[in-house]
Structure formats: structure tokens, C-alpha cells
Image (cartoon, rainbow, N blue to C red; front, side, top):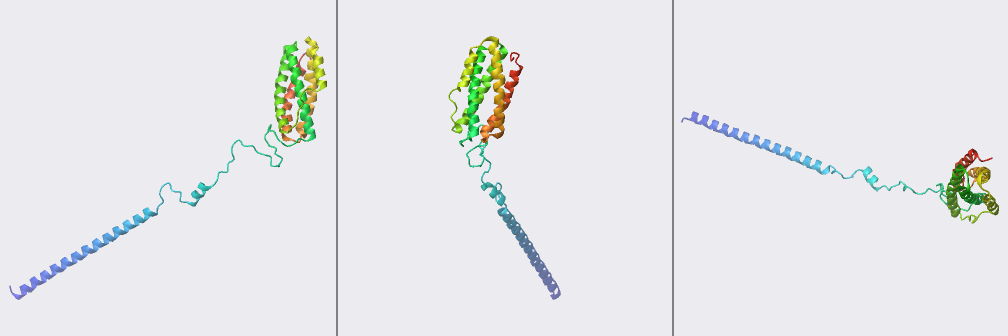
Length: 243
């Protein structure tokens, strides 16, 4: 091998070696870049996962406040007071412990005496009346006035008002006089005295109390009983034996 050929061979080996070195460097750079990219991607993924709120965790301020707010809905069925400091309640028929005004107390005691009379004389008529229509009318009076007396008794008890223990003497005399009659005469007197006269009087007293009573439960009682009293009067006026 002459010198020229030797030089060419040496240059070829050097070029081949340089090509290998450059190829190796290029591969190393690509591997490092890929590794860096993968590492960054993994890190970003990890960060995202660690900062995202887990499902079902109440992390917002609104949820936290809602969870700690106390319930404000009032209990169903609670009695609402009037707020006047008198101890009265706004529920119709509920007894109050406040003392009654003299006018209210007078109405309560007189209404109780009248109610007792209506029941007693109606029971008598239901037994002695000759006309079936009068008997039915008398039974209606006994039932309705008995129920009204129960309500009135509750109101009186709440106000510490003592109701009459027995009928007034004038009412006892009326029952005694009526008990001595019989047949159509009994029917006529019962309708005239109890069905018409007494109910006209009662309606006037209850209308006044429904407008001017000071105690709410007394006022409500008078107003709620009025339609029943008017129904009794209307029924009595339709009975054929009233004359």
C-alpha cells in the first residue's frame, strides 16, 4: 500500500468514526428530551390530581355555611300568642288565664244559665211533645246547646269564672209551668216561649258580645254560636203549632 492509498483509508476511518460519534450524540439528546417531557407531564398530572377536590367534600364557603346554619322553621302545631303579655292566645276556643272584664263576665254567666235552661227544657219537650216535629226540634236544641255549654265551660274555667251551679229561680218556674201542660198546649207554649221568645233574646245578646267582647275567646264563642241560634229561631218559626 502506497502512501496515497494509506491516507485515503485513514480519512475514511476518521469520517466513519466521526459519523458514529455524531449519531450517538443525537440519540442521547433525543432520549434526554423525551425523558424531560415525560417527567414534566407526569409532574403536571400529579399536581392536578393532588389539587382537585375529592368527590363529596364540602370545600366551598357556601356549603360550609349551609351546614352550620340552625333550623329556623317553627314546630308545627305550636300555639301562637298574641304578644301583648296578657297570656291570651290567638287560637279560637283556647282558654286564657287573663281576668275577664265585667261585661264579658256578665255575658258568660248569663249565657251559661240560658244554655242550661235550654238543655233542661228541651229534654222535657223531647219527652212530652205531642208533635214529632216538635220532638225533633227539642232534640236539636238539647244537642246544640249542650255542645255550646261545654265550650263555654272551658272558657270560664280558663278565666277562673264560676258558672251558676243551678238554674235561676225564674227559669225553674218556667220549666215547672211547662211541665204541667200536655198535648198540643204543651207544644204551643214550648215553641212560643223557648223556640221564639228565648231565641230572640239570645240572638241579641250574642250579637252584642260578638262585636264588643274584650276577651278574644269570649268574642269568638259568641260569633261562632250565633249561626246556630239563628237556625233554631228559623226552625221554630216554621213549626205549624207556634200560634
